Length: 323
Image (cartoon, rainbow, N blue to C red; front, side):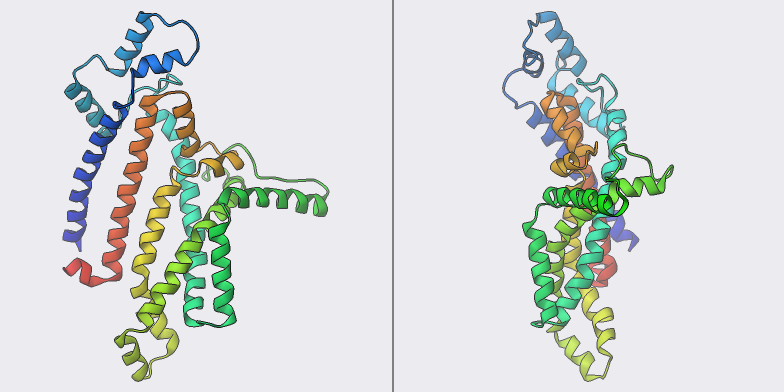
């Protein structure tokens, strides 16, 4: 097992290195000069000294190979430079928002698992019954409803319900509070976007759980277990469900990587200052240093999530690590 983990860690290094090189050159394929495009967007007169100063701050006067080395070495040493927009270190800007986005992604993934695994199992075991039809309709509704629209409905429901019950409308807090300082205040703010997003992405996982479990239930070893007289609950939990979770874990891993930087509209609805909102603001403010740093953060999360998915594969199916 440890040899399997070590090999997967070694595979992460060239993946991250290749992604860093790709992001570096893609950012420099933008037509025109980065500093001229950014400074000209102010609508004011810009002299050559300001452009030269901007190029010096970004290191654009250096040879391309030196720029590439500075970018890659800074990425692996957590020295991502200074934001062109705020003038503060990029690691500081990311640190303010990474914790919030990570917590929302983890909570939404937990909500998705709590919904998808039980409902997908029930739907497969009770195939073509009213429970199966209900779960399938529930999952289709989750696919059809955007998470940001569900978030709006949740906020309106909270306002109307609290107004009717307590006489005073209530909505989630706006200011982010660390869970280590105020767990209840933190939960009151982030539980609702986590539920809205988790339900949206649990729909895909529910359908995947159902189809994978139905396929496993038709295998020969399941029929053999039934012929030996094993209890049906034991067959499902110990044999069928565990072997059907591999594609489900893949879906959940992909969704988690997307949640770290893709909840732009949902963050706007719940007024969350996360990585998705920072992504949009960095592009609008033409902060190319922050933009490429954010891209690499999302890439790193995706690669690390894929590593955890591989570990889960080996834990669920010993044939993978033995191979």
